Length: 536
Image (cartoon, rainbow, N blue to C red; front, side):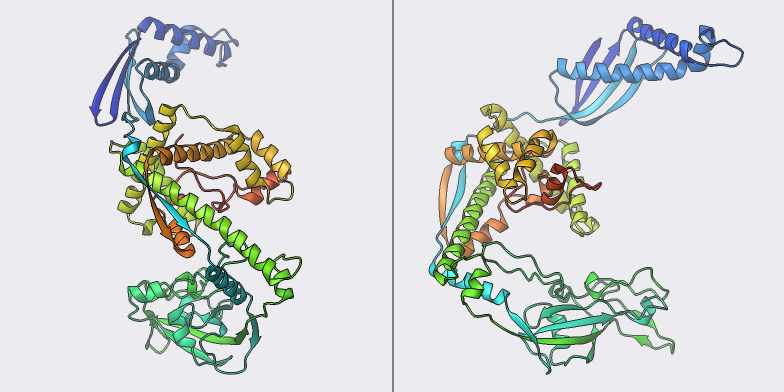
């Protein structure tokens, strides 16, 4: 077998392979013999079809099949012989498949870049330091108290601070004939969330209606109308999920509402027909773009007392404020420690990425962009709305970091610390009903175990780099540290690699009750994804 390699530009290589005619034709002949034994043709007894007839009928297909098999085997042998590291699928072109001649083909592909890891001692990483003060605990307790607000119906016009419940009605031209167009009820705290919507409803009493005019809505109006975060913080120090019933507005788009009936009637917070001009009504008068809103409930809130009942509700057995504050501090500290660790990881990854410059394999970048698009879709975001240059820049950053981390692992001959791996898996499984079964299941599934191993290996890389690089410490408050960690100095976690299966799914599978669907995109906050997990 003759092999030659051409550099056609950048990381692209063209592998030229020639297989001697004698070897190739002998494989074709053997395949034809096997075909003759199996083929059934009218007028011939089984296994007695003349070779000439077999070759006439099946020769072309057999040669193509043999060529495919030869390419599969010889390509692997050739890249090993030439010490190449292909990325993505090669583009194969048949050069010569003529009978009696050497079988020749070419395979074009990109390879991993070759580079040296920069001197780590010349790099700088940022470490955060923060302390939890009594004022931080006071604020946390106040937040918890607000989160437990007791809401009571108020028979009066709504005012800021009230929780109001509303529903919205689509224009008649944008809904089915038998549909009144009213959405399900949603609520939010007036003056805190959904500002444009609140401005429309402020001062109304339950049962009253108002028109939400969307004509001329600006981009700023649209941004202000996004679904409110509504996140609060509980006694564990973790951010609570946003209330799914919180209000939102149409997204302020400029698409007109179609006059004919539509298949579905989206709620105003889903953005359908938002901000567009509504067709004329039956009288020919053009309607304004917007929604009819109806206030259905006004509630005023009062804070619960900080008493034994409140404290025991958060798992404080003795019901004392002292024990409650100790629990709050303990869990705030755990969250702070995680934030500091995550920020250090981000700082290390950012330093490694910006400290290296080398060409990137297009297939890896394209695969990463495709993975990003899938993640956006998984979170209900239309990836078509994300500019291509944004996706490309993020993907290039991810791929560059992955390659640097991979090179450090190879150069330093790092291997997964089994003790740390077990600790990570035990920590992950500890919150489930049967952690032992889940641990056993993870160890029995190579794919899931690989993901945990990638995370542990990444942690070892972060520690190695942080130890050798220069360190700069920043002293921050508790909230500042959490904010810095959430902002991150590296690509967002949703852009890098995969994570262990969604907990409920993994636990169900461990019990032999797995559903038919694959796990969702979300993962526990305690399981950050691995920069080095994607693309091998």
